[in-house]
Image (cartoon, rainbow, N blue to C red):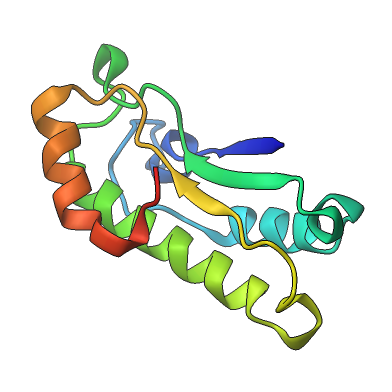
Length: 120
């Protein structure tokens, strides 16, 4: 099974290159998810899930956890929309995974906020 990590930090940078300065731009992720949904891997059910970024709190990559919550909810909506199309309704819908390494207290808060948007 395949898990894809979707870029988060790079798509929150401002024009000066500072991380976590604006809401996540999901346009590239949506194109990639649509591409994977049209692949043989989606038909075979080998796409296990998607996660946003990796070790997002490491070295202060992000500071605005609320933005991350909204980004995960948006990711869930994108996957639901793409896998909800008639031609894919019988495919295994990928899980939403993460967040990886945000620290115990922040992870607990994120999981509580994300609720049904997150599977693992």
